[in-house]
Length: 131
Image (cartoon, rainbow, N blue to C red; front, side, top):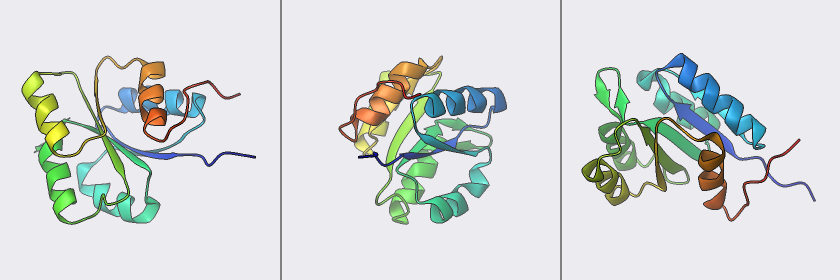
């Protein structure tokens, strides 16, 4: 029986970081969808209905935590698990993300295998590599 592929919408303004995340997710059998602009996120959520939203906490001109709070109020993330990524894993930021209902918080530099294992773990799946 073939398992369903998870779709992961990635909101990360840094192009190089996006490519690294994309390669890691593909390597672990997931389907990454890249979004570099916060302004395009709503449309991407509606169009793709992703299983997971992986979002940086610091976006150009906007705080990722505030953006997710707005999307939660609009009920756009009803069926989407949210993981925050940040180079600043301060306890108060991690706690705020947890209070918002985030499924996870990953600190940069990202460990690709740990990132994939944490995402897959939310769906009761193991993090083994796929070929």
